[in-house]
Length: 448
Image (tube, rainbow, N blue to C red):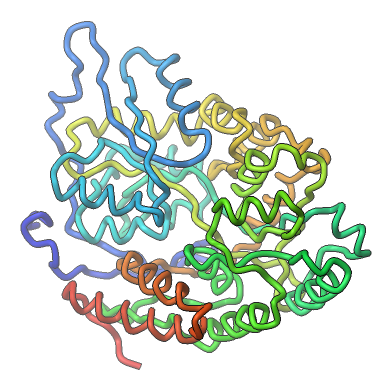
């Protein structure tokens, strides 16, 4: 197979593989590195460990690296914290790959992995991922890291959605967490009437991943395949329903529109001007570390659904991928395996108090639950709630190989929301941009 570095726009072949439990039906095969690097480079030299470089941004990562280095003598990890993916991390990784100075291993979210695979930026690590290792992970996480039957990354966590809310503010207004989206809008109206300066939640114009998760939860399917052609349905009726719903909430001033995790957003939470956060399981740690003075005031509820039955998408979710040029593949996978499948690795991440990551390895959920102090949430058993949400994640969601272009289009369109733009228009624009990028890369696109 020709090197992807020489043929970066070479057309990719597609393979459909359906399983009832899978979150992704369509798998993508790319002309990427097969991981068969010069294994002599694995040796650190007489009496010296192999040193690998690692880039990531997930909460608690520094603690994981410190714990790994303290407990291993054969491999040592040099860690560099980079911005989150959509905040510039992915661009930094892509540029480093092109320049030939990428780290040995890096974090990438599920939705970005197919893009990195399609560009030949990561190695096929199948030979280092035996069946016994794959069996440790949630089947849906394995599906999201498997393309054309090959393993391209190891999953760290699942990221089902939840509704975090200020219980004291809800109690003061005589409100309970809404179970449906219709109830959510009615609750938002009542909260605004009772406390005119307070809104129920925030729409993030700079982060498409939350909107994508809402569409996923509603039953949309943005990507699929027909033979060897990609099907793109970003602006489907289902997505437009979600778009119109949030457009109405914004038009009626029932939610705030603020950049994600910004000083503006944080100040709004601190002042009680925003009483809720629609986030992922990992968001529990974000709130706890961001708002230490609000301990005991917050609680967690299932995400509202369209029909009242449990349903969720995923907001992010992190994996460990090995860069194409690394000659220390075995050491990189050894570190990634330890970080994602051992009690010590998960405990180090969660015990910092900054991460409430829901492990992709089910047997480690009790470890995470025991390590995360829930006093901030009044002692609530939030991991059981996360576990129920994970079970309700809508199946058959597929990430496309050009999510960088899709997300850039959405982010650019969302920036115009306060100047007359609409979410429905954003979906239309993202549809066009995605199809154009697929064709630009030489990929077939199904018509209709």
